[in-house]
Length: 225
Length: 256
Image 1 (tube, rainbow over the protein chains, first blue to last red):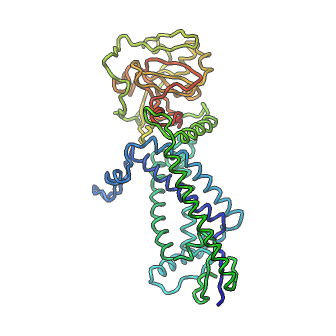
Image 2: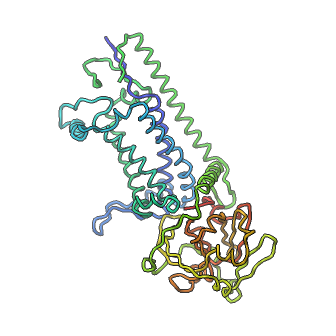
Image 3: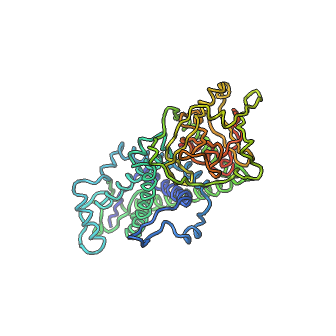
C-alpha cells in the first residue's frame, strides 16, 4: 500500500498560529476587563434588547468586575506581542509567496458558496482546491485584515491625540471604540466556526497544524491535490 | 503542496516525527501556562494600594518612553464650538473634595519653587492672566468621553508670568488637593502643552464644587484621572511625584 505524505503547513506558519492563540486570548480577556468599566453596547430592535454586552451573570462567572487597571496593564503589554506576531506573519506570507494560497481570487466568492453548501451536506461535491478552499481563503484573509483593523482601531482609541488622523479615519474616538469591540466579537464568531470546522475536518487536518504534514493511506480518499 | 509517496518503513519515521511534534506542542502549552502562572505570582508594584505585577509595570514604563519620545507639544487636541459642549458635565470622582477643612475664602494656590520658596496666588492673581476657552472631548480612563467647555489660564502662561522657567527644566509637575487626598504627577511636556489650563469656569460659569471649585486642571492630552480637581499645591521634581491612580495599578503616563 502506498502512503502519501502531504506537506501542508510550514513550520513558521504553525508557530505563529499557535503563538497567536494564547496572545489573542489574553487580549480578548483583558479587553473585556477594560470594556466592563463602560459597558454601553447592546443589540436591540426598538426598545427590545436582544443581546446586552454583557449581562451581570457573565461578569460574575468570569470575575470581570473592578479590574480595569489590571485589564489595561495586560492589554498594553500583550498588544506588542499581538502586533509583532501578526506583522511577522504577514511579512512571512509575502516573502515566501504563501499569500498565493491565502488570498481569495476571482472564483473564491462563487466557490465559497459551493464549499458551504457542501459542508452543510446540500451539495455532493466540493470545488477543487489547493491548500485552502475558497471559504478558507476568504475567512483566513478576513481574519488577518481584522487583526490589522484591531491594531488600527486600538491605536485610534489609545492615542487619539498623538495619532489623531487615525482616530479621524475611524470616524472619531467613540466610533473607534465601537469598531474595536465589533472586531473582537468577529474573532469570537470566527473562533466558534473555526473550532467546529477543525473537529469536522478530523485528525489528519489537525495534525498538519502541529506536525506540518498529513499522512494519507488510502489513495481513493485523497482530498488534496 | 509538496507530496511524497513513501513505503511503510518511511511512514513509520513520519509517525515518529508526528509524535515528536506533539511532544513539543504540549511542552509549549505547558511552558505558556507556567509563564502565565509566573506572571500572576509576581509581586505587585504597590502592595498597599493594589497595583499590578511588577513585570507589567516595567513594560508600561517602557511604553511611556516610546510615547513620550513620539509626543509633540505642538500636536493640538481637536476643539469644538461651545454649542457642542454638554450642558451637564459628568461628575466622576470626589476624592480630595471633602468639605470639612476646606474654606474657599482663604484658598490660595501654592506653587513650591525649586529653591523652597512658595508662591501664594489668589483667584484674583490668576484671573489677571489671559483667559482662554478649551472645548474638547474629555476622555475618561473608564472609556467614556464627553465634549466639555472649560475656561481658565494656560499653565504655560502662568509659568511665564511668574518666572518659573527654572522649574520647567525639571521633568515632572506634581499637584495635590488642599487635603492631599488626591494627587497627580504629570510629565513636563504635557503640562506645557498650550491647551493645558488651570480652569476656573465650566460652561462659562464658576466651577461647581463637585467639579473642583475654585480651580482645577484641564489637560486634554491626558485621561480624566490626571485632571485634578481643586488644586492646592503645585510642585516640580525630576523624580515622578506620587500619583493616586498609578499607585492603584494604572499607567503613570496615560498620555492620549
